[in-house]
View 1: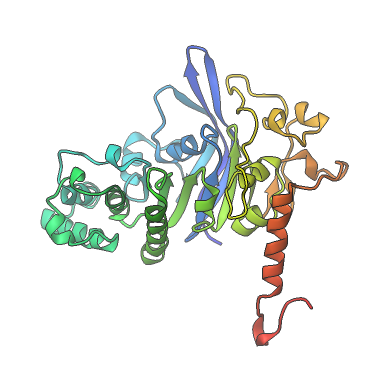
View 2 (view 1 turned 90 degrees about the vertical axis):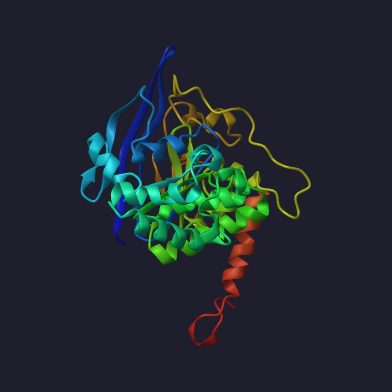
Length: 354
């Protein structure tokens, strides 16, 4: 598949009075044309910092000592301020978590949606407003023509998030980054926003990076998933591989934390993430990992191959590691999935398995 974005060996530090926070540590991933890549993990795992570096929106106290972010043959880390201004909002757009901090409360929403067209395309005001109306209709704002002059406070939370999405897609970007766009919304509106993004992806042919801590949301939108912990990607694969055959204990913990119809109590991963002023020598998750081996405290695990698309950075995958079964809920999930696949019809009406 054609890559539209390729991040390699990315490291990001933040200068603080206490020392350098090593927020992103040797992160590599790519985004294929037309796909949705979800990056998941707890708060503080480095998800938002990673995507903000793609947009060139890091804080002033940040430094990138290593790595590259390749887009259209250009390393965005080395791009000038002017080059990034041309790319940002045009080729690559971002949807932020809280629409009320993304929208200007003093400007009508029609003007806000039209603004990227005026800046990047030098479109006439009348044409820009016409396109803004079309995009507002596309994202499902009722009576969009008559609401163009309304202000953000006159819309519901779900409608404001749709307006933020309209601003992000009005130039039909090649890459759309969604940073926890459904967190502040109730479950019903979350589902509507997810459905909207999937529909828009096919209509405007964009690739999506979806940031979230909610694996339940991931299941409905992602093609591939990268799991982050303590500034590193520790497992990645297709959405089915991550949900039904996870290999890293941290991924097990995240999946176990998802409530189900059968849940009698909610599971919580014990402990807290490490202090990245002084990252641990071995696997950063080891102090919280009930399955940790002695080597986890001594050496950082490399990525071990599960399939051609699935890799996990855990010493449990080493050939000499003792066999450890995942939690019962993970096994149950895998068995249900295997049963589902076995009962799926194949070409000619035959069934897989006996």
